[in-house]
Amino acid sequence: MSDSIEHVKCLIIGSGPAGYTAAIYASRANMHPVLYQGTQPGGQLTTTNDVENYPGYPDGITGPEMMMEFQKQAERFGTDVRHGWITKVDFNGPVHKVWVNDETEIHCDTVIISTGASAKYLGLPSEQKYLKLGGGVSACAVCDGFFYRGQEVVIVGAGDSACEEAHYLSNLCKKVTMLVRRDVFRASKIMEARVRNAENIEILHNTETVEVLGDGQVVTGVKARNKVSGEEIEIPATGFFVAIGHKPNTDIFKDFLKMDETGYIINKPGTSKTEIEGVFVSGDAADHVYRQAVTAAGTGCMAALDAERYLAAKENPVEA
Ligand code: NDP
Image 1 (cartoon, rainbow, N blue to C red):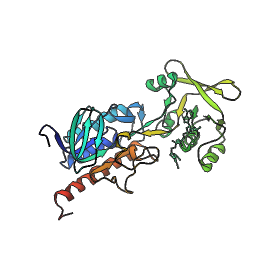
Image 2 (cartoon, rainbow, N blue to C red):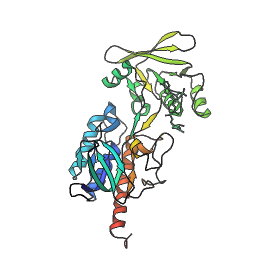
Image 3 (cartoon, rainbow, N blue to C red):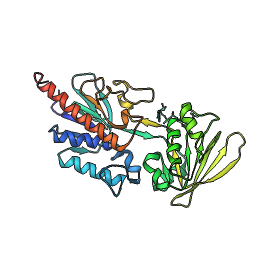
Image 4 (spheres, rainbow, N blue to C red):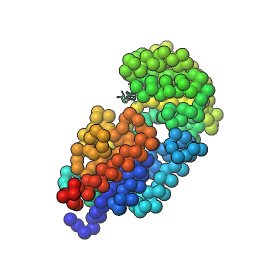
């Protein structure tokens, strides 16, 4: 091995709650973790306004502030937090290799994947504008629904997530309008029935979003078009929820790790272990069900403990 190649005990990829929690545990266990932040330091929470459901913050905290606190805590124990994007990995040999920005090669005893998932959005300029302004566009009803209690909201999508989120919102909001692009749902029958049975959910089939309307600061409504009749309507709403699926950020691992058809990494049940020794996964990269900051943090802790035990067993097989 060339002398110029850096060797690290524990490399953490990703800087959301999973990655930073793994870093806090790994650094306190003297694993000297190096954490690469990726292109969106702080992860999905940096696009969330107020976080009110993370224990320990009774008055709430903004997503970006919370992630800065996570980083500070990881650095306090010695985590080497670096800017950079892991563009390639090679998990074939006994030492796991990763490349930063297609250039720098690093060899690792353990790798903790915490690359998260990205919510899919429609991509309309008006949607992106109010998303960036924090003015009423969200891809997480559980995170943000509370801010719209007693108000009228619109949700797009017709899968299990959309049904679950629409139902969640219907318990908080005065009215939920669900925009379904086809004449049928994709969701399971039981989830579909749940939204159909809710009195304050109106379902508009064959309907697509034309534009998210607003006053320049916050959302005031949604313009939608019936694809069959061509008719356009304006729906008053203060919140626009997008629930059209997530994409796990796992493409670079696909040649090495087992994944489901969407790209979520399959871990050994009840652990953070992948089928490759020394490679662990935490957070949304392996979780399409819960997807919460607190569950991501929990699995980040699991990954660091699993990595620590793996190294201990390797270094001292008798004790293992
Ligand atoms: P899905 O891919 O299942 O559904 C996405 C939905 O969004 C579909 O109805 C799709 O429409 C719609 N959609 C996609 N793109 C657009 C667009 N551009 N405009 C309008 N609508 C669009 O994603 P989910 O996140 O709902 O679910 C992912 C997986 O997680 C599934 O396997 C699901 O079963 C599972 N899950 C399970 C839950 C549970 O069991 N409690 C809860 C949540 C998720 P179309 O149908 O026309 O393609």
